[in-house]
Image 1 (cartoon, rainbow, N blue to C red):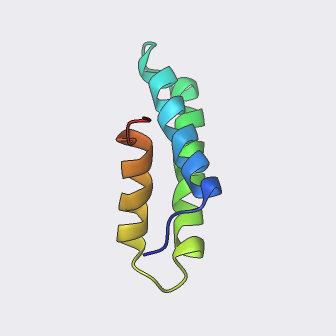
Image 2: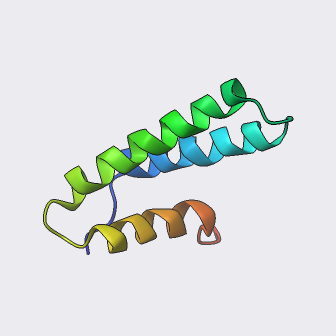
Length: 73
């Protein structure tokens, strides 16, 4: 599996950040709308980048990079 593109990583990072903002406040549909939109954008981009490769592995690689980054030495 090739390394995910920086664009795909940024799309997922945007979804994670939008979720953090949404969970910081009481639930409202409007408050969660940016998270839903960011997640949908990411999900639409994954198959385009996977292009016949294993979509699940690509998505897993992106999530690992964003949620569990390697320590910088």
